[in-house]
Image (cartoon, rainbow, N blue to C red; front, side, top):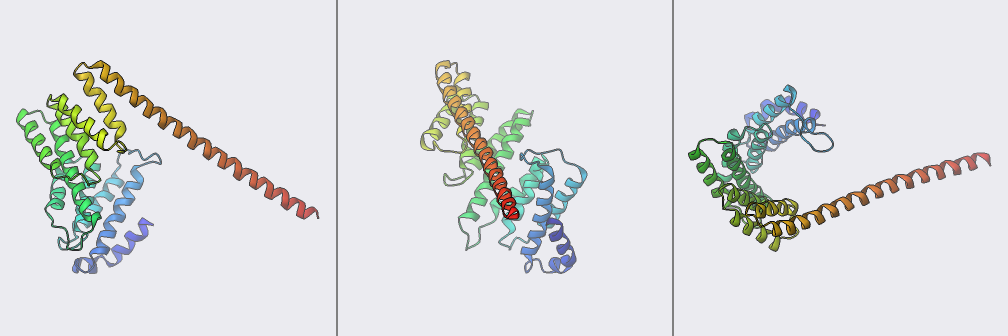
Length: 272
């Protein structure tokens, strides 16, 4: 499927690039085809990343090159720049990811923008904060560490609570507080998150970080309570997985019985 889209693009690429404003959708789809082809080959069925080979890197480079042709005036510009950043992050090229993420943040949303567009911008802002946070953790110069942490905090402060990336941002803020030695602040952040958003998809990570934080301040009783809650969560996940597995097995048995019943009926019809 992706190869077909890519071949179609190259057949008309000259026309597309002569009038990128007119054919921005086609240009974006071509870049996305290269991107999906690359991603499809760097992840197995478990969704876990695999080491990149030269072919995959080439597909990512092609995606980046084509996405860069989407003009700033296009409503797809934000998505194209996010995709470029995604390619760089996949390759652990953190510094390179900064510019496209800044481009997303600095681009005013179109007049017709809906919640999806706004959330895309907020997600890019949050991801840029993650990039700065990771660069801080890798830096050795104390001044660089402080600079990147401050940049991360600045980005995180721009993400509203309604953003889909908000819970990730809160977790990152808690980690930053721990790294700065402000463990109690991290505890307050995690407890607030779990209190007001108990159904957060990041509940497991939040409980785990909260338990670690209590351990750091030697409050082992509270840490024990938190890890007990974490154990309950893990047990619930385990039970759900067992139930899902059993359901799948039952479905397989049911299908097999239906097949055998169908074969028996066919045999009876033939005998008649």
